[in-house]
Image 1 (cartoon, rainbow, N blue to C red):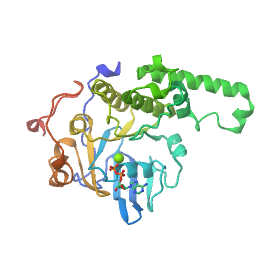
Image 2: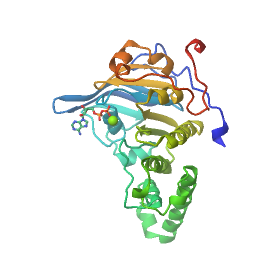
Image 3: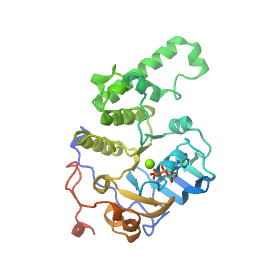
Image 4: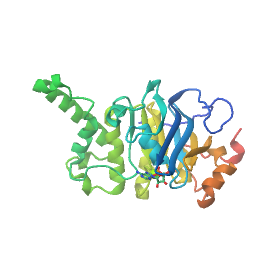
Length: 297
Ligand SMILES: Nc1ncnc2c1ncn2[C@@H]1O[C@H](COP(=O)(O)OP(=O)(O)O)[C@@H](O)[C@H]1O
Ligand SMILES: [Mg+2]
């Protein structure tokens, strides 16, 4: 299985100096002049951002930095005042969220959006909605619709099994633990076969017993060829699974780089780490070796 592999950190992702807005060798998402104000407050003001393909990028920054707002804008859940952005060269500007998902870019929410009064399976099927079975033709041909529904169910079961939620398929989502709801949300996001998976604080509020499993799932997404962009406050997690780190403060990108170097930058320490403990607690997953300071070339 995937989890026995030893995935290596992806390195050498950028062109030129690792600085805010730097170009990537193989970007999957490119954004320009993304600005969003709420009344007098500038929540997001990002000049240029490129997310490297088939790598794990962590978006970090203090509360209120604009991380969730940026996620909302890039996924069509909110509209920026200005800005353009492309997924693999296709413009996503002004594209509504369901179409963004259909185009391969999905996200999960900081506060999980699993619908408590639906079962786990029903939540999964909702993840596939809007991409299949919605056309007039399939609505007019019930056999086609049923076939599609069956395929969706099979796929949902595969994902639920992988996320160890298969035994809970008929339970209401409300009966799941916080961590299980996070897993359900991630599983549901995968129903559309995304290329870019954006996770807003996937570990927040998750029981430590499930943290390992969530981390493994994130690593597996990359191993399967997907790109991950995730918001995380736990620097220990970021250090161990991220290939690249983007730091936001007050709406702007203030630093970018590989985790080992970016967390030593003054702007990052000032903006963020100053208020966070930064002790290395050892290996998290056992899949990625700890890079200690002397090991970096
Ligand atoms: N819908 C909204 N209306 C008004 N202000 C908002 C709204 N959403 C976010 N903000 C403000 O924008 C800033 C960035 O918020 P957010 O994107 O949630 O930050 P983060 O996710 O980094 O903690 C904060 O000051 C927040 O209060
Ligand atoms: Mg947030």
